[in-house]
Image 1 (spheres, helix red, strand yellow):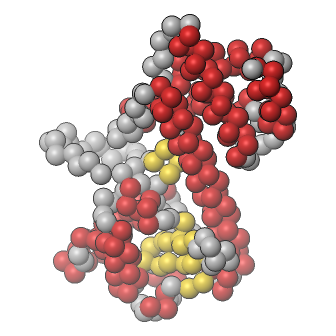
Image 2 (cartoon, rainbow, N blue to C red; image 1 turned 180 degrees about the horizontal axis):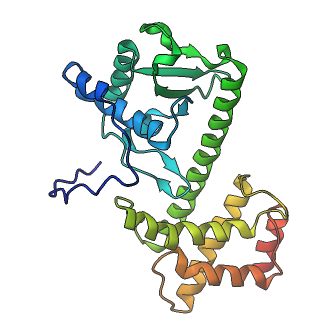
Image 3 (cartoon, helix red, strand yellow; image 1 turned 30 degrees about the horizontal axis):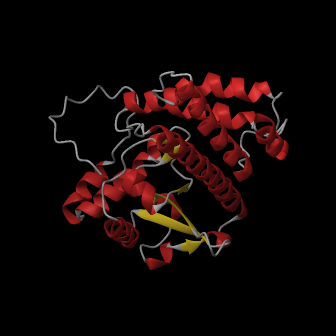
Length: 273
């Protein structure tokens, strides 16, 4: 992680995009180390900061370190802590009684953890027993948590596919991956990288398939088309600056053979050759 040592420009008036900080938390600061405080503030931001005062929010160690994922990449910079510091901070918060953690172990190969701030209404004792299995919770909470976990899983797959397409384009053009350190950089990356790449991916989706469904064969065909579009543009001596530069060429190449979905994509490449 790159640290920004430039002078802070000053606080914007807290009219939006801000989280209420409990005075109780300020009173606890002398008793909390850096890791516990940072983790607590980060979980506060992603629960109370979104008006969520009761539900658990799925969060990985990686996200707490580097920032939570969204469809356009990471939405913030996380805590900047090491992996061990995050684990320690969570454990200290649970032991102190400020944080609650639930564990979804229904898939032993992919254990999921979710967090929230411990409210007085929970009536839970401040002990190690605050870490409970999601299967032992009441049915409404279980459904809500499972829904959040499924949503996070889809977002994780989309982020993985997005990264794969970006790396494919970068490797065959030599153009560096976009920076996403600032809001402006993330918006630019979304416009010039994410949107064009997903438009190319969507060419190979079977008709009627939901955009929440992701398929590795579709990804493979999209990446092959990305590579072929780059080759054609280089043959035509056209400038390539970002995936947005190749989008129209890729769509044109796809249309040349009538356009086909992923289940017949091999025919597409046979015809194109």
